[in-house]
Image (tube, rainbow, N blue to C red; front, side, top):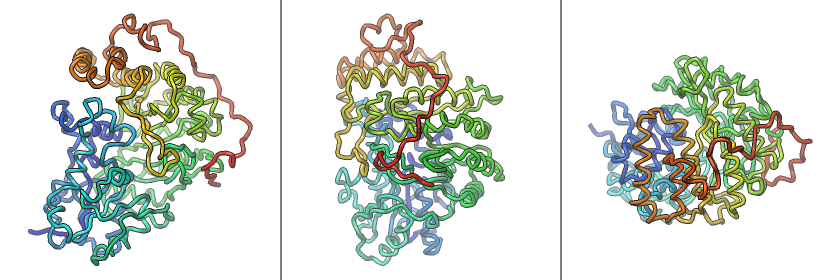
Length: 554
């Protein structure tokens, strides 16, 4: 029976999968090279579920927002949401618009081009392959120009950046938060009118954000938008933060549960800006009320989080204890957790650099209310506070920020070494000049040009992760043997000897064979440069207007 729809919305499988109920695993594993996916055992990174009619059971939240807006403007029978493999069911001669979600369509954001690049420049990451499979699907291309193709999402800029709009048959790319433009744009497309090649959206009024109709991947429920801390490599940090009303959050949580979710992921650029006070003040009572209210929704088994900052944890250490539900309701478990069920809370925390000079230049608002010079102390005290409360964060560091020197890298390595015993996951990424940021005109870092110190930082991070997260210690020998095999067959041909000794650390080669060729010495008794302070003092209040791009929400 034909199921053709006038409007079809679609997302790639690698952006939609709920693999291992882990947002960071989903994103990282989609960065591995597609051509080796089956050999590396990562073909599950695109596994998704469909409803009985073939529609998608869960897709990224941004696409669900578009679905809700369109279903309000048109008949719900006019709209279908699906994955690439089901496009043939819904795209037909009556289809007039296909809307496509693009989170990281070419795999060129911070982490993604790194890991496929370890296998050569020609290697296409899983997420890029899956998006190309969607956008070039015969069900769409064979009906051009009868239908319009509209692409939006946080990674849509990549398509323009690589001049692929014409090659892929894209009529319009939408940038930014699109709540206030979606309906008019799709109405024009349905009428067969010309639509703009590019639409730039402003941050919408809160009342423009609709309730969701169907389940989002990981049960995503937005709690804030924007940030305002002003980091120069991030576009969201330049938009002032605002909180979504609790009633709206709870209604969306209920709808997620009704659609089969048992996990609610509270999505935000910074958890600690929810219902914030003046000058980014953390509203601990509101956060506690939020978590308790979501936990009280019938059917909620788990609560997850996305992003947060370290400084509020140091300024308000009681917040992690007040949010005990983040641990009790977590899906994550680790033997090092002191929780009765060994659960731990996880969220993304951007540490980005250990260099005070670079921190002060590119992201000094991240440390507020502390001074940039206090950043190492903030990181160490914040990590200790989190770990004590069974919060094990997933932290990012950026390699290759503009103007980064060996001295900067040594500072980052010193901070990294001081975190050697932390309970965390640390993801090294390369600097990418993202569109609509203050650094968009700068040159990005390239994996082929990493220095000895940058390689050391990169692989020391992954040594930490393997030691902390690897469950089956008995299989460690396979990795330790596989790393030299990689180096002598692929690595040294692509990157030379600079990665040799850092890879040795990843392979657990004894430090006595490495210390002459690496900056850090992992030998017992080596004293870290930084230690956890007993207390980090908040300086006298600083005037905010001297920091460009900051938005103080009263």
